[in-house]
Length: 499
Image (tube, rainbow, N blue to C red; front, side):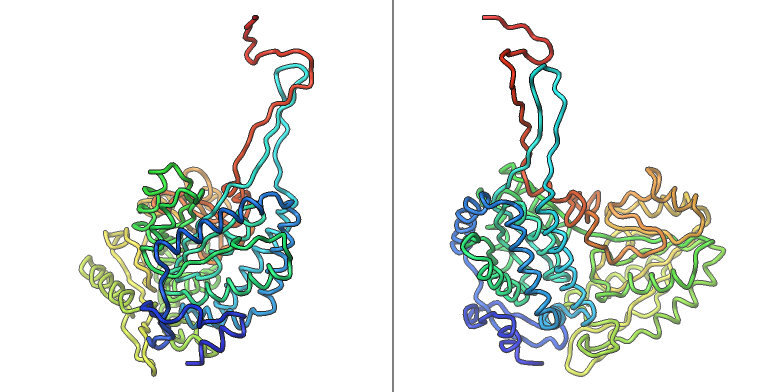
């Protein structure tokens, strides 16, 4: 493995500032420890939040288009360092290099979106029932935004939140996954470069990051000075964040479990469907929140599609994600491997036929597996639980209504898709009686969302929305204003109150 200190140095980060503690940064590529870091204490967290609060009070007075200029400069730094940051993402998270580079591109894309947004933080003008009055709504910065991100997208999810939060006039405190702290250190260094170029309008403490585990996250969530917490991770973690925020009546954006499904209808283009199935199910070694986990295939085409899908799975190159040609890298750690094997055992016990799923020995170590296809007799209990690994359960269906019912029967509701050439089937799937997910696609897989649309899901996925569309409104507070430019004082609803 290359020298991690040197790689971080090319990104402007001085790793020696963080070294010397008990928090190990481990690469899933080989399982070796890259470095040991000092975890932040509760006092450190409080101090960072206090700095962010002071920065917010200055930053909120900077005009929004000027705030957008900082994000434009940050995007320039990302463009200039895309290759090195993408490589670091691969080393620390284990996703293949193409996906590591793609994640940095996603950061660039949301920055470009946010720059335009900085001139479009629109309110409304509202008709008043009272003569000589005007009503309008205005949007104002919210405060300190806490961001908790997961290992599988160690930098992109922060950028979805931070780019919007910054142009909306907020400061940000970021708690990355304890499994991927180095990417956060690198991103902060690049942001610091952009701030230096931007000048004194960007206050010290505008962007902060924390290194540590659950204790750090808990201190961030519980702090009364944090106006909004955006948390990405497991449903269990999301429940804890939601309850903590609710206790102090703070806002929360939750992006949690997926357990995503796809329906392949009789009229589907099977070649197109197979390509989408494979990428959606095995990309990032099945460790995306939008990974495809449940596949419903119409019974008339099942025996045509499945052999071709098995052939595609057999051809997948599993190995070192830094090497060209690799399509499936390692699982993040031993716990992920054990969870995958446990799920496959449950599927077998419930009548499933398992193809693949075994461990593959790769020189150097790491937990590499053959992606698993599991033919199930029906949607059994194991399919109601999301396993963060490349397991794809396949079930036959007869009628579309049955497939939609099965699709919606799980607790999660993030992303979904249907492959069909029948306009009616596509429209039903996207209608109120179709998919109950936050994302419903036609003839593309559930994985690989663009930043232009709001990202998030329903039910146990948490209900939050990040990234594009009007997700920016979550990072601001709305004020309704009524202006009386007359010389009278009429009351609403025609109330008479003479004194």
